[in-house]
Length: 351
Image 1 (cartoon, one colour):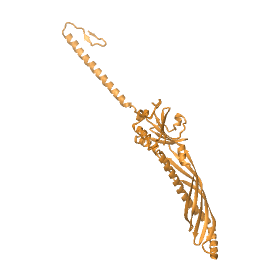
Image 2 (cartoon, rainbow, N blue to C red; image 1 turned 60 degrees about the horizontal axis):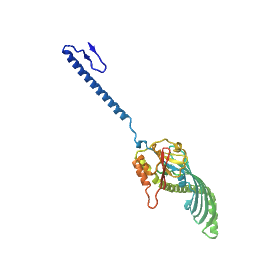
Image 3 (cartoon, helix red, strand yellow; image 1 turned 60 degrees about the vertical axis):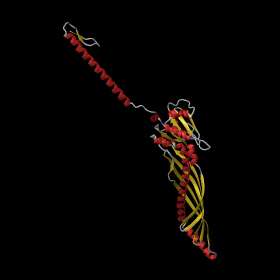
Image 4 (cartoon, rainbow, N blue to C red; image 1 turned 180 degrees about the vertical axis):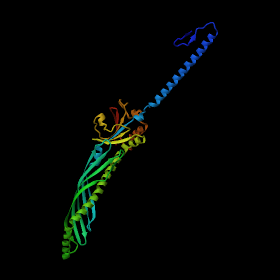
């Protein structure tokens, strides 16, 4: 007769026959072995689940969550580019066989427009001006005094690649008018009178051709002058920003993706992710008057008493950059101001 108890081993009712005790002992050994194997199997399954879970859910580190913005104010760019100019240059050209020398005064008014684009940066510089030249030309015994007046308009595109500014060649539209003031002769008397008469007739006949050649030469000279003028301005702007934008090289070296965009009041460089929109859309419009480095630190909802307090929250290479940036230079030192805005730390990089 068999009895079964939950949680206990099965057994038979012990009789007087000695085989009953042996049967109970065998059943007990089998039950203990089965329980041991079940427990080991459950432990192995549990270990496998824990291992699979830990491998499928990576723990993000501070580096992977880190993102930043570098903001360059529009006013800083306008200050470097939007300046009128006036140049006086020597003129030495040959027009229809007549060698002419003199001077030209070139004036230009520059207006820069920052084109809004969340995925790129372009500044369109529009230049309007005039060129007034006076020359004295010789052709045989004839001496021709002339003046040319040119009105021009030009568009000069300036691009930014996230590290420095470059420029494309200017495109020009011009109109030129050529006038003869007087014609003289190096010969005296009647011979000189004949030279002046012949030279005046030829000048009238070739005026349209001479004006076209003068226009072409003036356009070439203007192209070179405008490109050279903006090359100097862009070089000065790049030098001015070089130290403050050197942080970008470290971001790129750290493998951070870099994107650029231009907005109403500034150029923004996005580093380490983030949406393609202005920071003003996230924290409200903020006045900007110098280059700013915005660091996204969700754990930054506290008052930062000093730059040293940021150290635990920044990558090592960024701490090294900020330390080098704020280090004194000879007599003067560069300023490094910072503040909290929402979940961002804002560092103002000033000279």
